[in-house]
Image 1: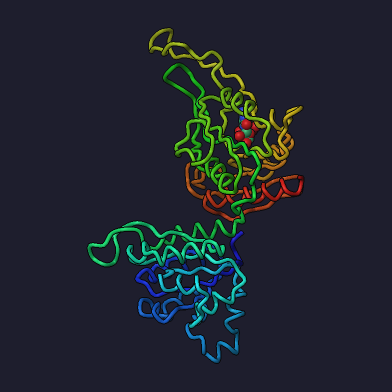
Image 2: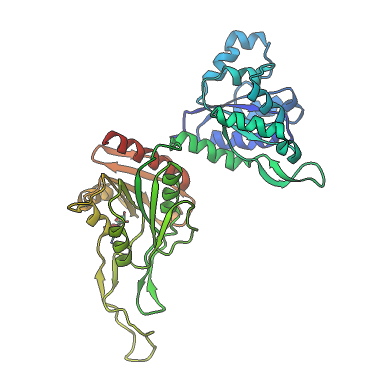
Length: 404
Ligand code: CTP
């Protein structure tokens, strides 16, 4: 989903410029092409040679470079990218952007571009707090410029501490990924989305339970991404490892039956995503008291099947959401099993992932999924769970618009 995208990286003159090398490396790892423009000041901090070595492309520095003008020109330079990223965005660069000044290649490219722009400000905290910078930032936001950071922390100058450190490369990367995932701010505005997440705990007695290794990371990331896209989100979560996402109504449950009841209470919704790893079975007669050793030997646990929440909602006679998305956690024949599950459960899409221990997906931060629907199978490249979530949310938004 990211491979083949192109970023024009405008590197400003700040100590944080060295972090751009790491950012470029990470972008390239994801198959994103990076072309860099460096300001005069930027070249005091990192050399065009090192930036070019990592981008693998010519680095542009001079507005009046006749060969470059002949080859490509600053207008084309700024328009051939899918996204323009300014990092570090110095106080000076931001001021020039806010006023439309174009006295070097970087600012000319910014004024000439018709592409979205993301800035990663970096400066001394006093410069960041200055009313002039505040005004410029307000103007840039009003112009539709996206911002990432700055962070608070120790500054390069001794004894200085405060807001002004450039966002870390990983944060800038996440902002770029979110941009390309297309889950933009308003795409789910006015929609109600229900998400289940986490494991369920099925009691054996008041202190023991049957559970599984689900962390809740993927489900919670989907709830957060749906919220970020403007949806009203209800997250029905089993005992997950991760904190509640902000701005989302979270209903905490323990068992599959509690999850089922909470889901039914929160219908109708426009779309429902069942990311929870619901225990298939529960203990038939959970003991009301703690089972003690020795009394009649080892306890025999009789299991009974839990209600299938996904299937029940997908086949709901009156309140079936327009889009029902299930997950399939498989350890073999991932896509075949997912196809079968689509039928069996009656849902519209199955997000299938391979949870064999070797993949590290269960509990990990990265996911490799296949989106299986009646239309076919899409293999998505491995990505952070947050990115998978944003991509899925973008697809949900598109599907709801199509069927509206
Ligand atoms: N699911 C559910 N309620 C259940 C069991 C599963 O809502 N009682 C949902 C999960 O949230 C997931 C999907 O169904 O979206 C697939 O779950 P999975 O456990 O993989 O499917 P099973 O039907 O249990 O199939 P199998 O055990 O054969 O893998």
